Length: 90
Ligand code: SF4
Image (cartoon, rainbow, N blue to C red):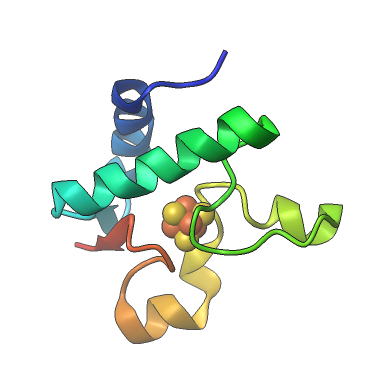
């Protein structure tokens, strides 16, 4: 069964609890990303990142499941956020 927004917020809240990042304090932005995740889950069965493109290969697409490994990426080093801005540095 697909997750609703409240459930996703709970899961992401737990995910960020003991980390040096948190959900973006901009609730509208978070809502927009959650809508994208829900749309992808409805369409593809998995929560693919809403701001990056899948190429249909397992190798690439699995790297696009949310939450992804954004802390290992340049965007985190430079902007202190994940690509979509769902997670930001505390
Ligand atoms: S960039 Fe952010 S929203 Fe996209 S998959 Fe990674 S953690 Fe999720």
